[in-house]
Image (cartoon, rainbow, N blue to C red; front, side):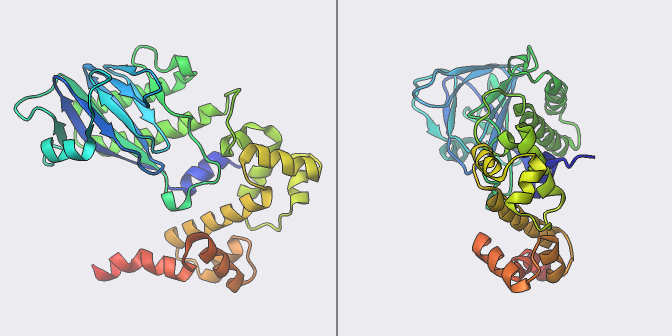
Length: 319
């Protein structure tokens, strides 16, 4: 079976999802959701409709009941009933109208709003962001009336339908189940990007290129391998010079830099998720020398592998 590089990356970067709150908004409203790292924020319209404003230079987008919008890369945006209103910062709106027990944000404390949104996020481990990794350029709207046909995402419509059902029924366990489905949806959206003809530079562009994808598969199948640019070029069926140039053009980093970065991300995952010894982890990540492994890890993450593992176990020791 060919190495599933996309699954390998998503597992190593620990994709996770959670809900912020349900928003119940009435009358005139405009809420500014600020930029936030590399998070993918999502909003599901449960009732009514609103506008999504991504910037002053772009027209407002209509969101209707049943629509699901994803805004990636931590991009700030505004949710409002009409563009042009002065926006309230989300933190101020939360301070004025958030009910922590119900998990509901209201701008009219005395009643339920006509517009209801379910808001949450998906995120990867920010400390180990994948080089050149990208989901989408700015946003994706999965429409209730076409299941995302405009984006070639018809296979994802069933996932969105399940998310909508969970959110509407709110039966026991719904938050956890919805979060897992959002993770499935994000991975499905990333896979769908491989069909784009205008793929931007990044990791997904490498997977979309059949020859570069073979080299990526080799790296992920054997990260401990004694790889060189020449050997990876052979895997891709290209000359070394053409391979190095094409890899850099697609992925955004040189082949050996990608290999080094991925080994460190694998090391971090093994330190976090296993009880393997430091020496064994170093070997599994292509390092015969423990000092060399430690130096590289510290250069990448600002602390040595031992300090990183001890930091993970501190909460357990204190409990």
